[in-house]
Length: 294
Image (cartoon, rainbow, N blue to C red):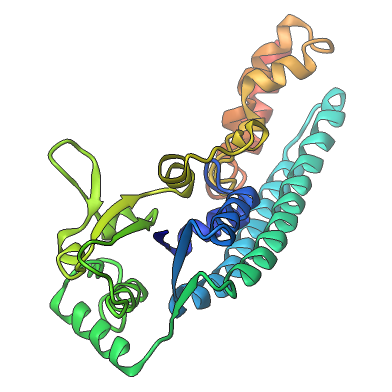
């Protein structure tokens, strides 16, 4: 039986579909491994607490971002002949929020069940863990990052001190999964990520580091996610693939004449640019309309 630790950020990715291959199926595969006694999961209490706070906070942030985008699009002066495409964009944005909310609820329910499994090893927060985490930060030991937190107790330090409470044998191995490579990892001479030595040296067992759950499941347990689930989910807070010029060209090339295609080619910059800090895109759209009509 292999021992696995999964950081909060990985669980959030699965809930909100914000990273490649991280979704409800990944949690299902993990659950099956526990049920088949192929893996045990080390669960620091801080991870469970962080997940239940962060998945809601981040989802609300995603909704807010989408609403700002919709507002920016509504304020743009779209030509009348593109009104259906504008409505399609707004509908698609609503579907993005809806699909992520549905997945988030499914993942949260699955995690609540998984957390109670017999092969989950909980590590409750104690006064000792809190004190050691504070000392770790005071010493500046990883995963503490003084650039992010100037004082107080770092949640990542609580994770490390919680893991140190587990009685690993020298012959055992820990599969450590976190996307926070900045604070938890360090590349070796070959460029492969390893658990930072300031952390690894305090654990008696061998540690293999993974920055995503998909590759951990694939390499350690020979599992593959369904081809349908391998589609690239991107962070919708910053990237909107449906706004690409090529997408619009395909969708509306039957209703635009060649003299107006230059307008279409600029829409990606117009709409994404409007998110940056106001309605710069509105003026730019008007300028492109004037150029196209000349």
